[in-house]
Length: 123
Image (cartoon, rainbow, N blue to C red):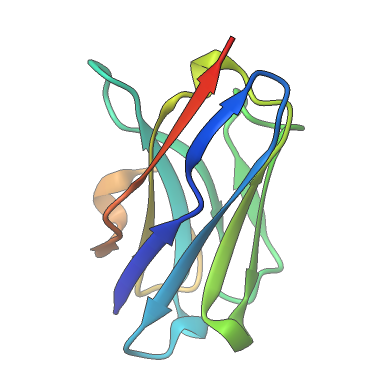
């Protein structure tokens, strides 16, 4: 499966963005998907994941209550709605898929990665 992340950009603190991760190739609805981010000079970190059906999600404590992951399997797309953005959310955001129905917080457990989309939050 091939993943294409989009929707990044420059936004002021307190603003919102919606990222999309669109898949092509195999049946996307059988894959769990995660979002990760990497800020300059920092390790890649888990943001959230969603199971294959969309019925189960998990979010990192740092984004809980502000970010929401969802998916539309008919469109082969996973979304990351980001609200109340903070400067510390600035990073390249990556979507990843794994050929299991449930997600993981570990980046190494994902088989496929998108190219990343840059989110910059100004103060």
